[in-house]
Image (cartoon, rainbow, N blue to C red; front, side, top):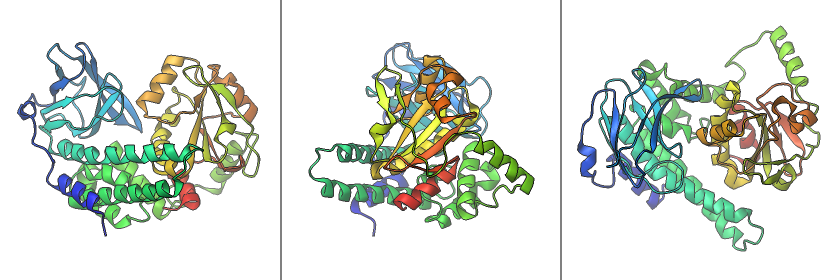
Length: 401
C-alpha cells in the first residue's frame, strides 16, 4: 500500500499542480521561442538552451536576463521534438519537452545555490508543465535521501537504525511516486522521466506500456532511445548487440590491455587533488562500494556514459555506493565545466591536469577511456569495464532493488 505522503504527491501530479499559477505564467510567447521572467537573479545573468544529442547536452542558444528579470531566448535552429534543457547561469537546470512550434513561457523565483529549479510555472507546453510537477515532488525526496545518506556516513551518528529505516521509507516513496506518475500519464513523453527512476526488471509492465505508446511519435528522440535501451538490456542484455566470435576476441584483447588490474586484484591507492586543490584519496572510501571512473571532458563516449553513472549514484549512494572520478583533462576550466554540465554531484573528482600523462592512469595502465572499475568495501576489484546499464545490474547484485 502506498504511503500517505506518496498518495498526496501523486494526486498533485495528476491534477498538474498543487498551487495556483502566478499571473506571469499566463503569458504566451512566440512559437519556438522560450521566454519568461525569473526573480532573485541579477540582471545580465546568462540563460542557456541545450539539447540532448548522443547522451551529451549540446548548446543551442543563449540570452541575457533583463533588468526586470525577463528574458527571450530564440534557439540557433528550430528545436526538434524531444527533451531539451535551459540552464540559469549554468547552475539551475530546468528540463523542457518541446519543439519548434510551442511558445513556452516560464516564471519562477530562483533561490541561491545550485541544483534543479523547482516551483516554476510554465505555459505553452503541456508536457513540460506536467514534467515540472513531477520534478517538484521528486527533488525534495531526493534531497531528503541525500541528507539522510550523509548522516549515515558520519561515524559519530548514533541513531543509525532509525536513519536506515527512514532511508527505506524514502526509497519506497520515490518508487511509488515515479510509478504513480508514469501510470497516470502513460501517453505523455513526460512519463519517460518517471521510467528513468524505476528499475525495468521490477516495473517492466510500465516500461512496455509507455514505450509502446510513445514509440511512433518519440521513438527517434535521444531520451526515448536511452530509456528503451535500458529496458532492452534488462530483458536480454546478451542479444541487444550480437557480436561475431572474432569481434568478441578483438574486444577481449582491447579491454585486456586497458589496465594492469582485473577482478580479484587490489586497487592501488590514488592520491590527487580535486578542482579546488584539496587532496582526495581513493583509500578514504574504504567501507563503501566504489566505482573508479577514468574519464575526461573532451571524451565523447565518457560524457555519454555520465548519465548512467549519475543515475547509479543517486539510486545507490544511500546504500553505500560512491564514485571516485579521475579526469585525464589538462584544462581545469573545461574539467570543472563538464562536472557541472553533466551533474556529477559526488565529491571525489581528481586530476593532476597532465592529460594522458595522468599519474593514476599510468599506474593503472589505462590506454583508453572511459574505463571503470567496481571496487568492494575492502578495496578489491569486483569487475571492470562497466558500461551503460551493466553498472546498475551489478549494483543490484550487491544492494538489491
